[in-house]
Length: 208
Image (tube, rainbow, N blue to C red; front, side, top):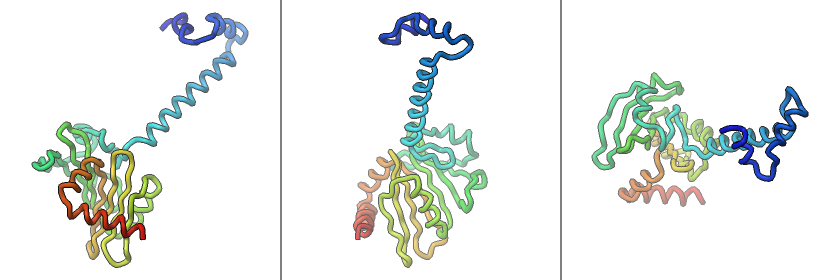
């Protein structure tokens, strides 16, 4: 775009005003130009921050509902686990040795038929439940928590199109840590009424 075309985009401004300003302030940016630049920078910064705030979670740099299977393969060595015949998800095992996360026992990722990330599933020591819960609480919205001293511990968070789940069974050294697409989980709960009933009961208990 040439200078004339650019000036035509600015309403209620003389076409030679910027040129005149440049003459008045040789070797420097005119005051109005500085203000305009600051406005543009502020707008771009706001757009960047807003985009970051509203983006889905990205465990290990894998963005839910965005990252593709090919991007996963380029980032980590993976082992194919096959395709789930019930929901069409293609799963991969990620060697935890390649992920810098203390205590990580295992990690898996599952992709929809069009190759988009829908699930990241991890196993961690159950002893890390409160530590992970506290960390998630700082970033995501808590849906419910049920963590009795004696019994199964679980929690559910949400962020945009993703649910984040923690589940530490009683007397089990390992717990599940799951990022999953909201629609996918809601459909699974409709298919499995037992899971849906338990989830509803936990939400009710949390309100007591």
